[in-house]
Amino acid sequence: MADSPAVLIVEDEPDLANLYAAWLRDACTVKTAYNGSQALEAMDESRDIVLLDRRMPGLSGDQVLSTIRERELDTRVAMVTAVEPDFDIIQMGFDDYLVKPVSREDLLSTIDQLLLRSTYDEQIQQFFALASKKALLDSQKTEAELRASEKYARLEDRLNVMRAQIDETITELSNHDAYRRVCQDLSRTN
Image (cartoon, rainbow, N blue to C red; front, side, top):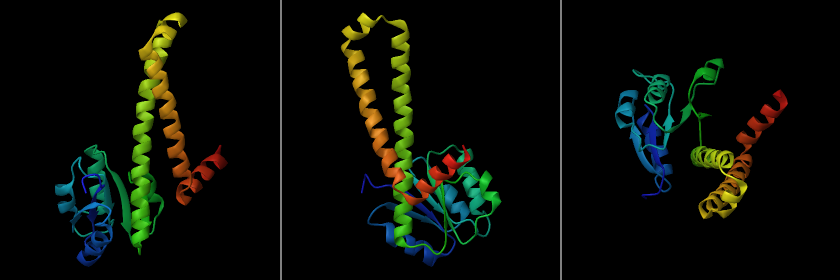
């Protein structure tokens, strides 16, 4: 399972944490933490996704989330909680929010979407890095120099491939109901 996503389940109810872990074991590399302190001990750059309960004794999920973001760890966090969302979520740094009870399909779908968003972020960063190089060369070289360069032609080809990959990722994201609703909401506010 070297290519499977590394998921940390943070849940103070051991039976529920173990159930989530059993549901995900076939698709993910799973680690469980039964409180906030254990979660922070288990957190490092190797964690792709954290499924985090908000209401836990001691260190709450909100505090764990804040610490993860302060550490600037490149991980996606989905709150999986019985706490109904309120306006306080606006300031929170999570990537998704699931209200319990959740199903195996809910967890797997959320993990897939969070991984897809991560891929999209990486694609966008790579695309803009290449586009920046192209723009610099466009401003500094003559049209004849650009046409004569094999490296420049490969750069243009890579940009075209990246555009296609980004379009494909956007299509996949758009097919997810929650993402579609967000996009619709954004278009209504403009």
